[in-house]
Amino acid sequence: MPGGRRALSVLTLLVVVAGCSGDAAPRPPAAERWVPRPGTAWQWQLDGRVDPGADVPVYDIDGFENTAGDVARLHRAGRRVICYVNAGAWEDFRPDRDAFPASVRGGPNGWNGERWLDIRRLDVLRPLMERRFDMCRRKGFDAVEPDLMDGYLHDTGFPLKAAHQLAYNRMIARAAHERGLSVGLKNDLPQIPALVGVFDFAVNEQCAEFGECERLAPFVRAGKAVFHVEYALPTAEFCGQARRLGLSSMRKRPALDPWRQAC
Image (cartoon, rainbow, N blue to C red; front, side, top):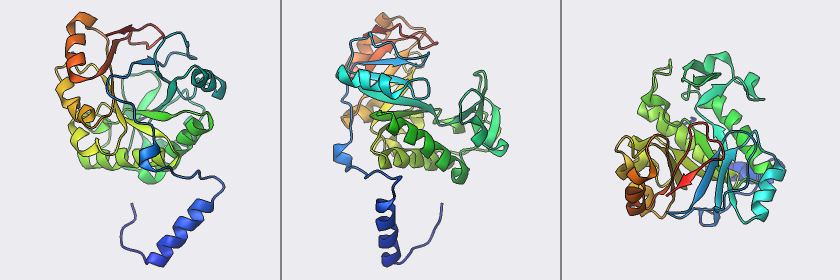
């Protein structure tokens, strides 16, 4: 990121020019962004176009697979809608796959057609992620769920450090907020203390299975929802703790199809 201080007049001019750009939407005050409250029920479906049958106030669905009409239909039913996009890995099945240069594609992450991204390359990845968030905004989504926000904890093929992840995650949050979208922190439990003030909610997988749910408490204390799923554990083994902690918990199949079993 560029360093050094600039003259106030230059900064002011840049702000004015940005505000006049035909591609930029006004950035809403933080107080006006949607911040889901702890315990808010949700549905998470990434397998295909959304099935609107779950009677819950929040849906988290794939941003590419669903249309503006799908989002509008959920809005008419009184739902908030989160746009899932992969922020940490390249996917060979997305329409923008060719926009990612080979230099930022790392090792496989275990999912077919996916490779970790070199999150140190903010100069390359920022505009690509901004375009994805622009897509979410055009389709009418309320928020984004950027996936794989903890590459530094994995073998990515790049020498990623915690500081690289913090810089990248903060960039992601800024890009979402500049488009009027709320944004969730996906997993990345070690950095919650540093990021809870930047993100509007959290999304977590399997904190009960791995004995980590207490680490999500800062979000709940801040009045922000923790949208949580388990795959292997029956609800009887995690729902009691989830309720005590104020989590929004359910059991899902790993395919993330419409089936859900809520606490």
